[in-house]
Image (cartoon, rainbow, N blue to C red; front, top):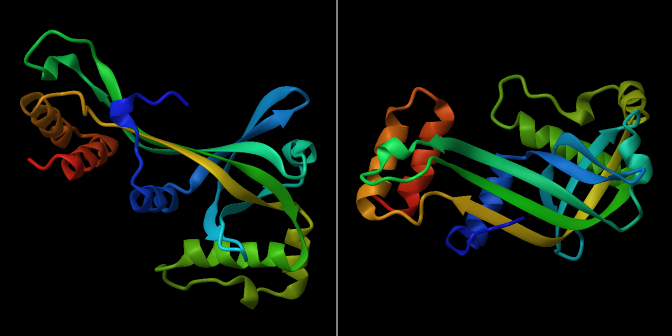
Length: 206
């Protein structure tokens, strides 16, 4: 994706945290010569060699999986908080813009089955059930039920090859205008605006 040099985001611990917090992402590949996207929850993990991987699953009824070449290239898009920035917030004439955080992950995908697939399902449920009352676990579900569900899905694992991350957060503004943008976002009734202001505050404290 296009990333302005001022918005290039390279802090690996922050990006890892971002991927985990915004794990409902978009898998993009080609199906019959056309772009195809599916919105899915992902788990960030490591393989047996210690390489970073993403794993997830598709419904078997979703034809996207049939066009996934073994070890072929795919893109996963992670979207974070975003907010409209009004030019009325500046102390000079300018145009409105949009602040956002986004990460594109490129990697090689392969289908997983058997124990590898079950590991994915158990991990996925454990990750998203964490901290919830009356947690459920795949291990406590009846084998017949689990088997019926597994038949309806296709698991996959993506070995991460490249990460492109953009944090467009008014880095090109001077302190006066930067702080005023944060103030206006703090005053907004929209929750995402407040999340963006918090991200801006982390990078340039008031």
